Amino acid sequence: MTTTQTSPPAPGHLERGQLGLFGVLMPGLAQVAPAFNLFFTTGVMVALAGASAPLIFLISMVGMIATASSLAQFSGVYPSAGSFITYITRSIGTRVATAIGIITILGYIIAFGGIYIFVGSYIVQNVFNNAHVWGLTGIVTIIYGALVVAPVVVGLKFGVRITVVLYVFEVALLLALSITILVKGGHSGLSGTPFHWPSGAAKDVLVAFSLAVLAFGGFEAAAPLAEETRNPRRTVPLAVVGAVVVSGIIYVLGSYALVIAFGVGHSGTLASDANPFHTAAKAFLPFVAPLITWIFLSSVTSSYVAANTQTSRVIFAGGRGGLWPRALGSVLPRFKTPAVAAIAFVAPSIAIGVISLAFTSPSTTVSLLSTWGILGLIIMYLMANLALIVEYVKLRRNGINKNVWLWVVTPVIGIAVLAIPIWGDLRPGQPSPLNSLPWLTIGLIAVGIAYALILGWLRPQALRNAPALLEGDESLATDPLPIGQ
Image (cartoon, rainbow, N blue to C red):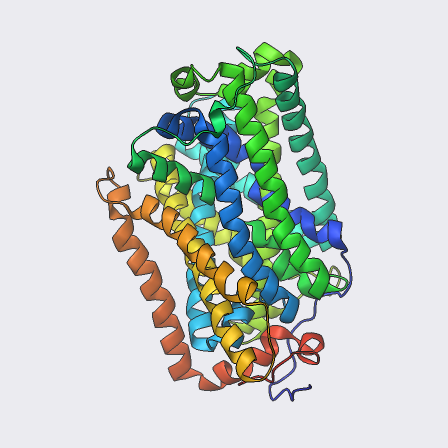
């Protein structure tokens, strides 16, 4: 069934058919950043839930597959650079999609502002062996930000190649260390204890689960690459779900190896170690120990390149659809990349992080910005799950039947799982400034809603034209439903 495009031509077009399954899978794998999350999350999880961190990662992987499945079903029907904005537009409406788009993009900008500062501070301390100095950390952060956006500007294939090289280095050494620990039996032999339900306080266990769920953030990076992917209706869904499965296996294996390296009876020692993977490497695979800093930097850099690649496409699609300035929907003629959108994403993120350093310490900046911003991403995941259920009803009403398990039951599971990190981040009793997160989150949501309302008031035609422009002509021609149904 075909549709008629009633809007002006899009300001820019991405180059079609550049990526196959491997190329579109890699950004999702890289953006998850397994080494980064294992290095800085496993110890905290063990402090909260004891030796059962591998079980928590395993259960969280199964839970996040539900949300990945929802995005995969959508990408198999409406492949688009707009990703979740397109999906929510087609199911619930452009106003809601615009609000969620603003919330998510601002969330990414805020969260990455915190992580940029984390990386800048980490480089100053571990590479230059200096204590944090506001000017030096800020300069290093700005230079690093320019470096990780450059591959996105130069070209999609170039950026993916950089991502692949860094990810392979990260995962190869991480797996080599993990397998060596297990082959040598760790501190006191292999044990099934890490896969027993944790005996800690329920509140602490829930917080550990929230950390594990958040560790999968970014798995959806394949979805916005649909317009540049060969056979996207088949390839992109496989890549979206595959990113969660592969990352989950690495999390379970890596956390289990770390627990075994210290011994299941020594959870306190592991939890109190500031760099447990370095300690484990020194004991079981010494040549890896000096490389721990570079494994971390490789992990976070490949994640940044993948995140910039993904988010620039979403911003590009929104600009093409007229939901924000059309200049963001342009492409560089030479490289066929959404360079303006990429810079518009990275520049304010770095600015927020660097300016925050003038008022507080790096640790406080990282904690507040990354936790606040990630809630924007969680809101998007929630709405994508809800949107799939709505789309199921619309398709069924028009005589198109979809699998009720994948289109209704699975999204409900995804929503239930995502409630855990929402509680974890907004729970009462947190120290300052984290106790302000409920109000900051309400403010983030209010900005998204206000933007959508003002856009609808000032430019109602943009809301009417957006669905066709968001999706693009090639996808529109084979949609199961016309726009507006």
